[in-house]
Length: 360
Image (tube, rainbow, N blue to C red):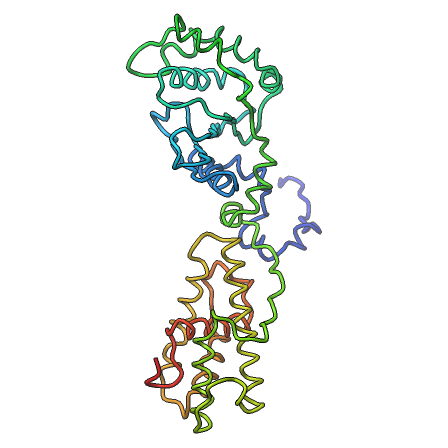
């Protein structure tokens, strides 16, 4: 006899699922996603975050075997041998950090600063996806408790673990160094703060997959042609001249029809320039250049085909750009037709496209 069953109905939540979620699954909040990262990925996130901070001249990763207790090293002035520096110690554990997780790290810090392998950092911060547990947090708030805890746990946690080449007993001058060490330098970085600051970096969308933010409005072109747009404007003047059988030295002598065309071209150019800035602020280097390359390869045959004049070449090329299927750009969803036309003019501004044959 078959067991009694029931009819499965689609819940409102599932029935109204976002198409993007159907393709890639429900969005995972960053505070949860970082728990899925590997230890190496977590170090990379901290590196990206620290590199975005204005107070550092150089940020380096030193994680791995033999790191001597330093993971992400942030130096204020890399040209100065005695520059202040901060250390971000990355701990990707499946639990909030407890005192037992850090004694070896503090032991390395004290030992290697004692023997002069590196200077005492200005700040030493633990960074962990699940944060710091209550017991360790209370100890951090009372630095003397950290000192006492390290001394009490040195024999069990540090003597044989600091270096593989020898035992490091806590005695003599090393003990004096630990007793004098400023444990107020030890702290932790709250994970929500790191995520919010990382959100402002070009790496956030790639790391956390929440899509790109909305674009700000594109600027209106200035009345006067700017120095950075003279080449594509000169190419357009040649194209207008080729269309009219005339030579134009400046936009002032253009027909009203061509003046309107030039104004639209400049608006497109400034849209693309705004997209370049947007890409620089929200994505790693190369995303916008990749888009330019896709558009160039998509329109080059049209640009180099036979046309009655330079102006028809411009219009055919920009029209083709608006119809390209740009499926592999990281900027997908933030590129509109005006941007595509603007990229064409950027390419002309760099002489990667030419409107009048023989003009270069």
